[in-house]
Amino acid sequence: MRKYVKINDRDNVAIAVRDIAAGTQIEDGLTANDDIPQAHKIALCDIEKGGEIIRYGVVLGFAKEAVQKGDWINEHMLELPQSPSLKDMAYGTNLVPMEKLPEPPRTTWMGYRNKTGPAGTKNLLGIVTTVQCAAGVLKQAAERIRREILPKYQYVDGVVAVTHPYGCGVAINAPMADIPIRAVTNLIHHPNFGGEIMVVGLGCEKLTYDRVLLQEEITPENVLTLQDCAGHDAMMQAILDMAENKLERLNLRRREELPLSELLIGMQCGGSDAFSGITANPSAGYAADMLVRGGATVLFSEVTEVRDGVHMLAARCADEKTRDRLAEEMRWYDSYLEDGGVGRDANPTPGNKKGGLANIVEKAMGSIAKSGTSPIAEVLSPAQKPTRHGLIYAATPASDIVCGPSQTASGIGLQVFMTGRGTPYGMEICPVIKVCSRNEMKEHWFDMIDISAGDVATGEKTIADVGTEIFHMILDTASGIRIPFSDQYGFYNDLCIFNPAPIT
Image (cartoon, rainbow, N blue to C red):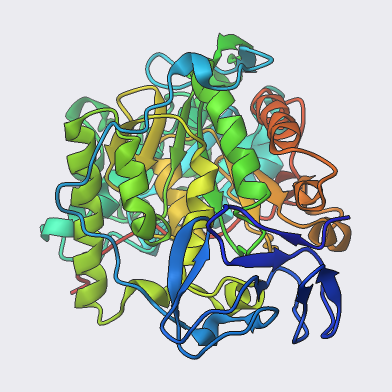
């Protein structure tokens, strides 16, 4: 079994496949001077003070002190380089032709066709609040619907109470308020809700129905105002009656064989480690390339986790307009972080660093790998819906519990989530497939991780092997054939929509 992984010929560091004890001869001429934890970096040559530390063929940072061949290199030993400029980035210089992408072994799946937009991967009754004040009532009502009414409708998969911390006490006309308003609007119309609109408001909130619905959608059949109800029992009965009408129509829906062009999925990573960019993310990227070649639409996101590789993404932008939109989103987020008094390196967590990621540059290089190699067809602002097929960059925060809802508001029917450290994260609106970067993680969470990409690190499988496995699970899950662990256990995070606007 290999002892370390080196990504690029230029690299002067490598990643330990297993813990390496000090004094271990790794190969001729290379002996560990320190204990090297799994996934951490070992110097492959002497590096002078101020010298470049290179992984992925990219400068991760500069050595604060001289490093000897065989030394352990950790996050405390690097000075962060400047982030790449957003001016005049070259575009269209790395466009992989469609016929060069890996061919998908399947080109159809079983989904719920909608009148417009992508198909659904589930058949759900979605009930959305306009304001957090209604959340408690809605959660209790949803429990009663599941218990008392849903058993009568065998073709409906479930009831989702979509609550969020927005709607009241907000600067509703602030320039950035369009982001959370767009998110709520698009969640109401999510593909897994089958076109059935059910919105519950309080009655005095700033996020009024007309801000999230078309005028023709604001009808007694679709909206319910709690302040109009005379007490608890009337309130509950009104919600249950409205829900039953929706369930009757949803129960008529059936899965049908559909082309990949009607599938929209998201790629996300969280709890990453230094193996994420070697195993799990590239494997997911391979699956993404197969999906794109088959006609599907794939979103990837997380601004701070691509910012240091933005020039690489620009090279994959299909045209100047897409490149400019990419730069625009990066520039906005740079200002957002600056206004908050933090830099991009506030991103890596203690767990990321324990898993061998020294800084945001290293994390970004691994994160980008989940996008595969396809050309970038479009760039979206947070919670926007795509207008094109193919690979889409959807700008969102990197936080798992904010990125997920943002992608969901963009209409994904399924998410593939890569992790190195492990997380029970999940979403109720759409299934989440977990892919881990290390076999140790799969062995530890054997009944919570769906697929391990760890065999790529050991050399027992290729990225194509694991990528194909992920591809098949995506289609099986979207078709309702397989159920990922997060859905089996009901591990669903709260819906944290991104709100950069002021709270008054």
